[in-house]
Amino acid sequence: MLFSVGIELPKEDDQAFGLVVPALCDANYGCFSAADKESEIPSMVKEAVIDMVEAMIEDSYPLLNVNDKGVLYYRAHDDYAYCDAWLLLDIDLSDFEGKPKRINISMPDTLIARIDEYVKSSNEYKDRSHFLATAARHEMR
Figure (cartoon, rainbow, N blue to C red):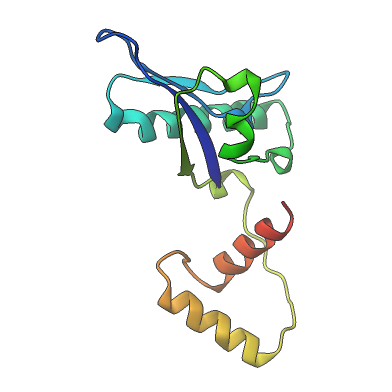
């Protein structure tokens, strides 16, 4: 899932980068972190997101309710005015969606062939099932 990440740049040499993931911030949760070096930002954000998702699951929070509204939305939001920069980070949350379940679906054979060819030529998808699950998540946003 793509997450918008707000970055508060250090004002002095001894300060860290402040990090916030607004999609995981609501009345009950707040996803914040810090990084000493710019190169550490992705790993620190990923760790914070994974920790927050685990806490949400423990609280029975439905992950389907997590929706990133995008950098332009958050940048214009007063709650995140302190953020000096923004980035998008793709974090795989598939391990938290539950165990795989086999289903039987019908599709035209030409569409299946097109999907398989697309998956084979792309480095983004593991297999046909991964492609279809990603497409389904995209459509349900």
